[in-house]
Image 1 (cartoon, rainbow, N blue to C red):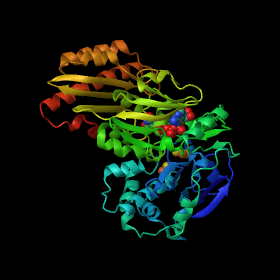
Image 2: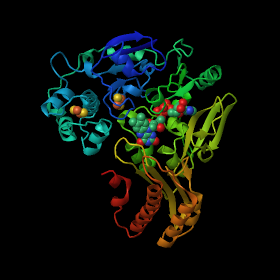
Image 3: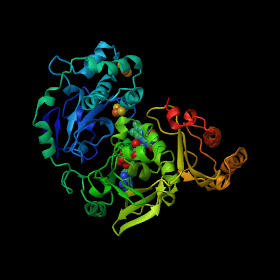
Image 4: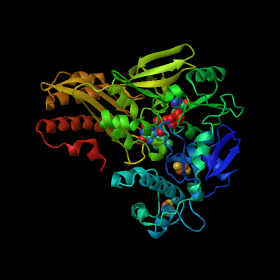
Amino acid sequence: MIEFFLNGQHRRLAAAPDTSVLELLRGPLAQRGTKEGCASGDCGACTVAIARPDGDGSFAYRTLNACITPAHQLQGTHLVTVDGLARGDALHPAQSSMVACHGSQCGFCTPGIVMSLFALHEQQRALPHQVLDNHRLEAALGGNLCRCTGYRPIRDAALSMGERSDTRPPWAEDPTLERAVRDLSPAVAVEDQSGYLTPTTLAELTTAMQRHPEARLVAGATDLWLEVTQRLAQFETLIDLRQVEELRQLEEVADGWWVGAAVTYREWEPLLKTHYPAFAHLLTRLGSAQIRNRATVGGNIANASPIGDTPPVLLTLDARVRLAGPDGMRELPLDAFFLDYKQTALAPGECIAAIFLPRPGDGHEQRVWKLSKRREDDISTLLGAFRWRLQEGVLQDVRVAYGGMAAIPLRVRAVEAALEGKAPDEQAFAAARRALQQSLTPMSDARGSRDYRATAAANLLERWRLTLARAELDEPTQEVTLDAYAH
Ligand SMILES: Cc1cc2nc3c(=O)[nH]c(=O)nc-3n(C[C@H](O)[C@H](O)[C@H](O)COP(=O)(O)OP(=O)(O)OC[C@H]3O[C@@H](n4cnc5c(N)ncnc54)[C@H](O)[C@@H]3O)c2cc1C
Ligand code: FES
Ligand code: FES
């Protein structure tokens, strides 16, 4: 049974483990304002918002793609859909501004866009002094595609929400709602008959995995659920990782941080912003707000895609993974985790429990460059990650890793060796490019040909050299930093 609130109304209903939120909405719940476009998390037409009590006591509304979210993850939440915003004939500002700014034509994308605007409006209400700049607008709307209206009127609608009458949805004025949601259990019983298991401790998780060796693990479901919607897979048993206490922790230790495998990108971002700004910036280009609100770093690593964004960056940081299984825990360098295309060092019955992110050393610097066809909400064609420190004019502790250049994300040790202990001059980088050519033969696919990838990967090395040359001349480096790349 799943127990939650929908637009202020209590709901309790059963669903098969592989039912999505969208199926539940458009089927038994008859909330058909929410649309299905791509069924793969890309278009945003199915965007809805949920609030769940967070560990820090907050209760914020965050967007998600209903098409790729397991219905069972609604347990203990308040789900808001486009059908729940208006108060009678009085439209919510997210709706009235779309009407006033002519932000809709065929209307198919509109319910999703309205929900992204609703979440943005809620953020503005919470922090009214926060400037609604391009960056925040893009972050709020980057997961919503519109094929006919064009984005200017939608952008205008976002900017003008604050000028509209602030009509609150009926449920927003129910003082008992938040308490009632908090009173719901966040997890159904681990041996619930539904086939959707939600262990809350690592011990329960490993036991569930032993009892159900056929079960698939699910965290944010932003990779897994594509197997349901695109390949029509059916899952009879799923084990949800998101309530497992040990997997949700972000623990600071003397030499770094243990990041629980079920920590989402949104939750991880503040730490990265402070200590690894180039990595944090990459997150702004990883999926969309809907994806980042739910997707986890553990899922990114376990999925072992050659074009996953975080593995190359983590490889340059000498990250380690902690694996949990029936015989306890073991640790290994991330470098030893990826074995071959989609094959990892995980043994049967094991999962990733946490990722260790070492504290940046003195003088360590990092650059990360992601190349993709679209800036927002697109998977990498190629990603280059570079870390180093300059000591007395020579490169030390050089780490170079790429995604999209081989069957697995990997460090290119020959390139690192060509640069280690060298001045960052043209000669050293020419040797590094030769080493890159000799080490890797990239794949060709719909995203990029082998030649494109080989050339682009070498060009990223040159970009890195130019970054260093400019720093030496004490020139501003904006044009070659990630921030500049984002515009
Ligand atoms: C629209 C869209 C855009 C995307 N954009 C990007 C992008 O820009 N860059 C990028 O890298 N990825 C992108 N992705 C892919 C996806 O969002 C990421 O890989 C994400 O980090 C997966 O995390 P998750 O929690 O959703 O994993 P899930 O889908 O829940 O799980 C993924 C796989 O890992 C397994 N798994 C999950 N957690 C664990 C664990 N702790 N231990 C063992 N196995 C585990 C699951 O069984 C499953 O096989 C995108 C996906 C979508 C739908
Ligand atoms: S239907 Fe396109 S993101 Fe869900
Ligand atoms: S209004 Fe037609 S897709 Fe956006």
